[in-house]
Length: 246
Image 1 (tube, rainbow, N blue to C red):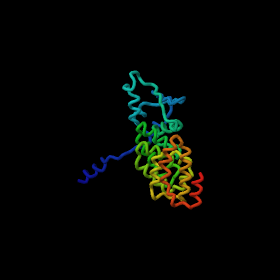
Image 2: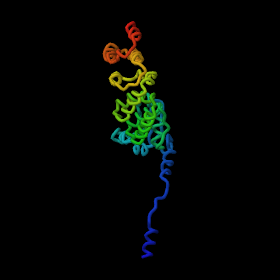
Image 3: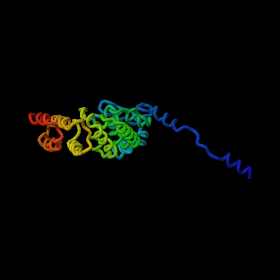
């Protein structure tokens, strides 16, 4: 019995090695002509790439690299990206080869856009986590900058997080020029809320006028939608007089 027990211990398998070795091995081929079998062309930029890495990380690239995409063998793919995404495209490719990428409030959104477009789930989740942490910590500027895309593409949890920080920090939000980029529907949603934190209704009125001036293509319709939502009863008489004069 003792021998059987000893043999059982000896036969126990243990995991050895380091999976990071694989990552390190692949990462050295990033934008390298060595073993490159496909080129990604973006404007004047050309990126030497490798089918195996592209199809491993993205089913969209898998389709683009397959013969079904083109009757001829695909050696070069020309890409068209949103102008926000062009500067960060090298970072996007870096992630495909390394599994990591440096990001800040300016690059998070275009990287998320690329992750959505090419269905790179690992990058998508990493960007979403970064945005969530930033918003939770009160990054108002980021929340304003990210919100339109999050609304457009159905990132509901992140959208709601951005809305909450905007509502709570509305006085600070009004100082950002990015506020002028918010769409009419969202402004109506904000003005209909009773929990907006602002120093005065008059300051909210002035910023809405500024928004109307910046979005003057349909000014009359916008004016009819926004102005009635201002709570004039909460203003001082001198403020009402100033509005009447304007």
